[in-house]
Length: 123
Image (cartoon, helix red, strand yellow):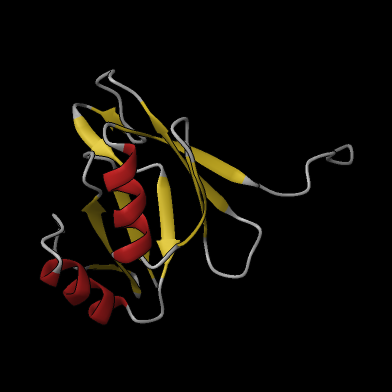
């Protein structure tokens, strides 16, 4: 195999219906750092790493997840060492969340942002 010229994933773009509401939600509910907020996009930083989420407004009926056999599958997965506490925090903030599941010692759950984008968090 030849050397990869790609160092890392820098950002992922997420479609949103309401940019202002979405930027506040990702900042206030998920605790991400809002770096830039314009009419065209919002840039949020995930913790100390180089990874960014970029929210892009659209009127189209589109999401940051996909389907397999008509079942929604997430594209973006986060990690959290405080999975149960995070699950409770999301429920307290009226976020649509699924139950915590375990698969071979791997705990995870899915949740949805205000735009219907399906996300996962695991530990």
